[in-house]
Amino acid sequence: MNIQMDTCLVPFGELRVTTAGSALLETHLGSCVGVCLFDWYARVGGLVHIVLPKGSKEKEALFPTRYASTAIPLLLEKMVKLGASRKKIVAEIAGGALMLPNQKLSVDLNIGRRNLDKVREILAREEIPIIKKDIGGNLGRVLRFEPNSGKTEVRYAGVKAGRGGPFVKPQKIELDKFKTKMENGNLSRHAACCAMVSELIARVKGLKDPGIFFTAGLLHDIGKIILDQYAFENFNPVMNRVIHKAQTFIDAENEMLGYNHTQVGGMA
Image 1: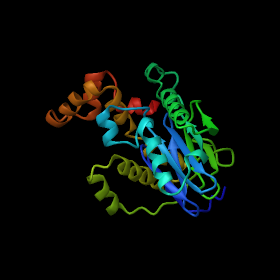
Image 2: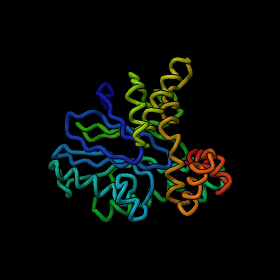
Image 3: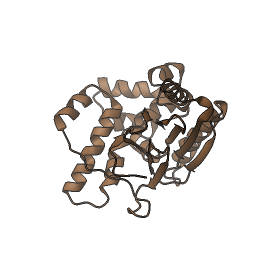
Image 4: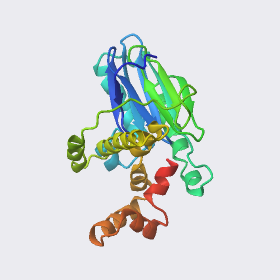
């Protein structure tokens, strides 16, 4: 794979569609699942970062790229519009790890396994064969998709470069643009901003493996998405305490749930 090409980051819960000559697609995975689809003949492909297996009708309508049940059909639809043929599309998948397997909550939720089961179910229903997979385990991954060849490459977070370490590309940080994006309330953009700033700080401080800091910044709020889906009956009261009682998210979550989004996110 030509790693000198420009790289486009696919944030969690989003997708990108590509044609030959486009930038490399890259996404960072824990319990989430990356699904790459490619039509070798039309040279049309795409990558989607699956956060959760499915959601309520309201959630799926608002955030269709977040859930396997809606994101994969949407990716297929976009690829077909660019000239891909459903009969010629193949899939490669990665992720679905069980992060922090020694913690009961992580094992009980087992989001990685649920994501994998739903992804395979949807692909089987759409008659899309899986030709390559790098799934399970308990390590985070960096998944890259090359649009010219349709090839994927997986590196494991926390492992030194040359032996499967994370990809790191220097970024030019424009904080004024980041501030505007964060104020718009776009969680995925906020995560990307935090990721790049975290990597920049790690580089300035001379810390080892700045790519790990990038991944940590990217996923630091993912626990909120999971709690909103799986503990939704208590998540609104949490928000009420944050807004009306001036509690921090963590204090309100600990009081209402007995745990908080940082703990859940650490298992994702």
